[in-house]
Length: 197
Image (cartoon, rainbow, N blue to C red; front, side, top):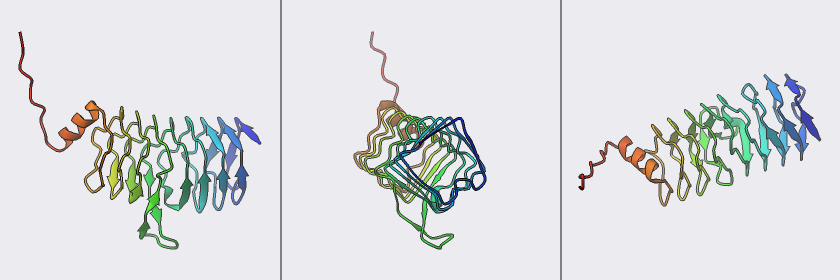
């Protein structure tokens, strides 16, 4: 099934299951996705910025060029999703324990991709991000709180102002610019190299 240039509103998708469905250039205006599930679906240049997530599930989905800014994914199950080239500004990735409004459990995003995604101002809280692809992503002012970033690939990513203080970093990949930016955030100053004539 392919939906193109559709505007979805209110409860028309609530409680529905979608498999191998394509949403192209669709807008979801205050759409309630309570108990909805999406399996192997593609959201291309869609606007999901005002979606109401509640017990929503995305598995093996692609969000190329789609907007998911200002969302809280604590009531969303995410498995093997590709957020490459998506816009996810000021978005919170966390997972609440069933029935709890404050207690969190580990959010496993290790099978997801965020290459070239704009995640500026977002927060990853208690997330498993081992080996995740963040290549060329915008990670400015992103908070990684109690996350596992072992072997995550942030080469080419913009990490100005990103906070990794409480996260596990081991064999995490940065390019030279990222390494310098990380060092500056820790108070290091790059020594001026002598001029050779």
